[in-house]
Image (tube, rainbow, N blue to C red; front, side, top):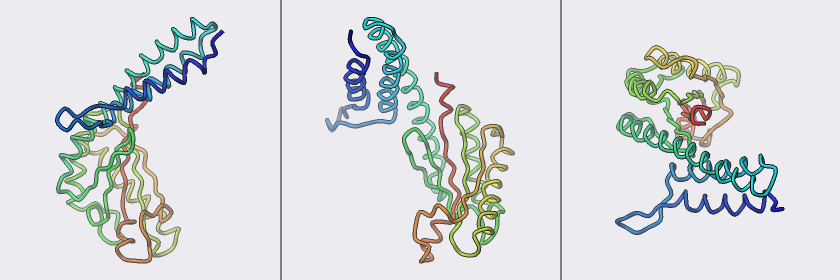
Length: 225
């Protein structure tokens, strides 16, 4: 009897290699896209799950292939969905001061304090409202996205005060998105205070980078199954 692991490992590896790579028709260079990566990972997971659910070697093989196909379709769907959303966000955030970063299937919008709030304030600036209007417009079109909003501060002042300030700022962003048409059950707001710096708090430049609100957009996985 063929063990499931002996079938799944080479199958998953092959699917990952095929699914993740594409060739640029102009340069001839191999590229990797988020959609292709999602397809490969989905196929690997589907193959593993399918193989483990069978009772015999033939059953395991068939189930692995079926699971790979289903998993690949789900992974490709997520990747393509987030690719389209990312491109629209990059286009709409151009010139706003809001940075758009892709992390796997997640999209992170980094909103520095210079864009969002005045000093020691949780009231959104006009610039922030304009940017969030565009974000809300896109989110209302992509309804299978979870919206995680986290406020961050530098280390100046007490930890407890900074924690409260970060929470108020996250809530200000979340409330504005909700008022702009994004369903509240998709919004998750929290504050991290000074605990997750992205730069040194020893310099003003570093502290300015740490004062931010990050909006992480994640696909609601169950919607693609």
